[in-house]
Image (cartoon, rainbow, N blue to C red; front, side, top):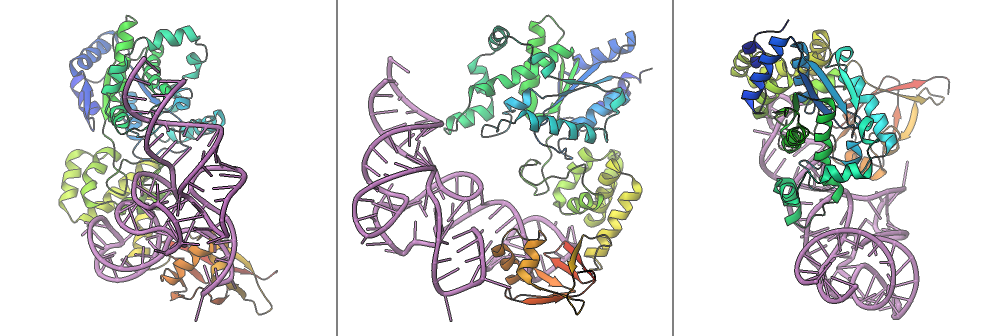
Amino acid sequence: MFKSIEEQLKIIKRGVLEIVREEELVEKLKKSTNTQTPLRVKLGLDPTAPDIHIGNAIPIHKLRNFQELGHTAVLIIGDYTAMVGDPSGVNKTRPQLTQEDIDNNAKTYLDQIGKILDIEKTEIRYNSEWFKEMKFTDVITLTSKMTVARMMERDDFSKRYSSGVPISLHEFIYPLMQGYDSIMVKSDIEIGGTDQIFSLLVGRDLQRDAKMEPQTALTTPLLEGIDGNKKMSKSLGNYIGIYEEPKEVFGKTMRISDDLMRKYFELATDMAMEEIESTLDGHPREAKIVLGKAIVSRYYDNEAAGKAAEEFDRIFKEHKIPDDIPQIALPSNENGNHEIWIVKLLVDHGFASTNGEARRLITQGGVSIDNKKYTDPAQEISLQDDMVLKVGKRRFAKIVISQSG
RNA sequence: GGGGAGGUACCCGAGUGGCCAAAGGGGACAGACUGUAAAUCUGUUGGCGUAGCCUUCGGAGGUUCGAAUCCUCCUCUCCCCA
């Protein structure tokens, strides 16, 4: 039923930063094989944003590895922890979400997670299940397990404290909640990003305190965003979402710095390490194309990946327009054209949010129609059917003049 | 509870009566160069059909010809003492 311990370890350890403690993990795997009992592997996700990107997908893929090895994937949707907001790695208090936001996010999460995990075989738990039953006295008992000094050892808190950035009391509760989840689901292993290590270790302490065998903590690295220096995150806008269109995923991948490729290959694709190395030996541009395709096919398929790559070439190498661009429908005048102030055209169709921004784009030479640049923001233009508007380097739209109007 | 320091644009942060739509940096956007690389360089970055006008400096009032700047109250944060 189970693969050998060595084979399992090889798969488990790919792209993993830290295992606390590895000897325990080996023991657990042995015991699991001997008793033919799958291990319970926990991953907690807080539905704080509606999207999953290839950075926060890394631990989900790790969970998938375990699932494929025959272990039990226990996915915790942290609908209660999301209300607290994980203080890990942030330098200010996270905004508290409303129940409605959380519910909506949880819904989209599950859709997206279906791209990675076998949902049928996944044990999905919401932590409101146990937290909403808690009495205040239970909360007191839980919080008594942690000291302020230990909390303040954490880099994120001590930094905030020493630079005078407020820390709210409820943020201290977060790791305890996460640890409590581990007790409730009786996890043998917990996966998390490296910024989660503190909470994962708290889980061990709490389990030990509850006379359980402490979970093995397994951390995955954080992936830098496409800007190349900050952690990939939704709020920084430097992410590649797994739900995004293949061409977007591919295009964004092409924009990452060459230095980041190795890390992206290792963490965001399923390619074998040897294959990755030989690919990286080639021309960086070719390697990046392989990377882009690999990421797309992970969430879609090879066909979509190939198409995305072709389209990319068509736009940026051959300088043609993409084959599938949004349309702008406009009514025609008696000559079959549409007269419009160029600034209004941009603002009305979402290429600029204000007239000022539209003027700026125009003045700076970022706007062209049928390859003709327009640099005068006062310009009145006469649009004809089938014209192509280009804003910046990669935003296009086709003008469609409807005869009816 | 007492004392002190603060809240400035997307973020950080300068500005202590007019020269302030507010320095500088970051980010973002656009252009040049490229491999749509990255790095670099240049420009823009409150709104308005824009040589002008309108609305901004935690909130509400007030002083003044004139307020981000002075006063009052409210609110939030940090530090020290208890």
